[in-house]
Picture (tube, rainbow, N blue to C red):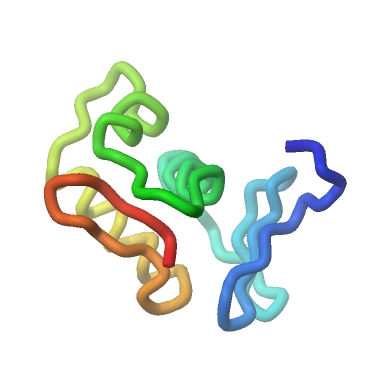
Length: 98
């Protein structure tokens, strides 16, 4: 990851700071939970493809059980903090960034 660019620019004035794990919107910080950070970073790392539910289970939830409600709730909360329509759900498969 150490490309020297620690900021990930997102549409509509949003950005993500890899080092500080902070989402910003027009220079205001938006607080993320640990799971939201893991979820978002997994999507960033795989921008050009769909991230499967299995990958979210492994990377975000680890040994804990990821229920449908848990992932839906996480995505709903993240969508409220991110640009509109940036996280796309592919039913039964996973999520990707637009």
